[in-house]
Amino acid sequence: MAIRMQTPAPENGIDYAVVEVEDPVHPHCRALMDYWKARLQADGLMPRSVFNPLDMPHAMGGMFVVEPVDGGADMRYRLVGSENERRLGRKFTGELFSDCYLPEMAVHQIAFHNRIMAEKKPACLRGRFIGIDLEHVHYEAIYLPVRAEDGGTQVIGGLYDLAGHMA
Image 1: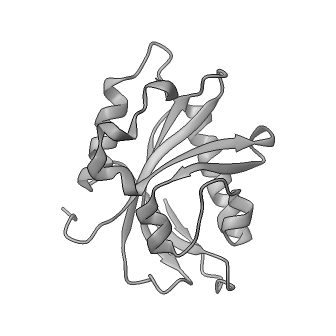
Image 2: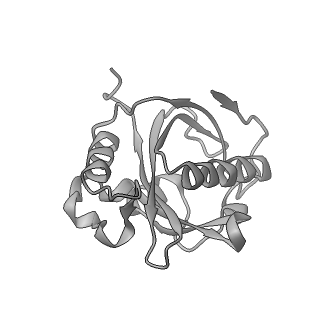
Image 3: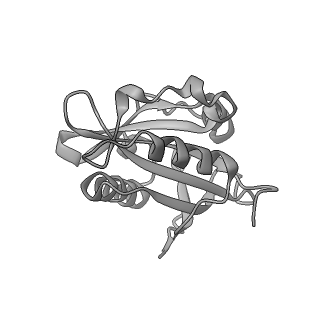
């Protein structure tokens, strides 16, 4: 499924052009997927409480944790790895998607995360960011649903540069 967002990004807006792919190729995305699969419970989810970023120190800079806000009307980054915040040029930890992205990208990302949580299935996107002078960099992101301590669902994952990692 190709997703094309091509609106010019304003000063604080981020947009993207991505495709959803079946399987990750980046070693960190594959490691996160394997970590998640190894900890799945009978309900088909990994408990958020067993996720420890220190188990994968090589991947920490690209990791993120997302939680729904207002019943999934928006999403909040609970955690974004320092490497991604540095590369993307802004702080995301604690921020709402509606404040981080251009409106069309925010709507898409909120729906995408809601789908992952509802279906309890992982997903993977590949593409590039638009409007932040990183159009030349191709990324891959893995999204994994997890059960939060309150019984709700969150998404953990990672976003990594594909340079040198394409099959």
